[in-house]
Length: 120
Image (cartoon, rainbow, N blue to C red):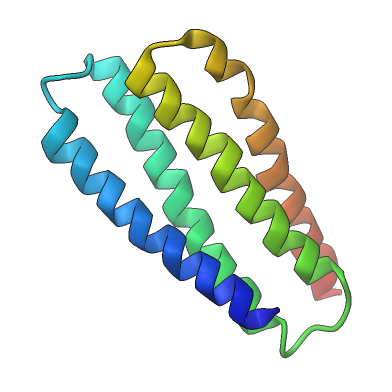
C-alpha cells in the first residue's frame, strides 16, 4: 500500500506541475482573473496533498493501523473532487460544479484528522 500512495502522490505532483504550467501559460488571457484564481487554487491544493500522499507512504512503515490508509485515500479523493471540480468550474464556467467542491474539502479534512489520530 505504501507504494500505491507513493505512486499516486508522485503522479498527482506531476499532473499538478503540468496543470500549473498550463494555467500560467495557456490560460492567462483566456480566463477571467477570477476563474484563473479558481484554477490556481485547485493546483495549489493538489500539490499540497500530493506531498501529503508522499508523507502517508513514508508513514506506513512507521505507524500501524488503518488510519494512515484512510488518510491516503481521503487525500486522493480530496484531490479528485476538490481540485477536479475547481478545474472544471474554471474551464467550463458551470457554477453548479462549485457545489461539489466542499465535499473534496471535507475529504482533505478527514485525511488530516485521520493522520493526526494515527500519530497517537
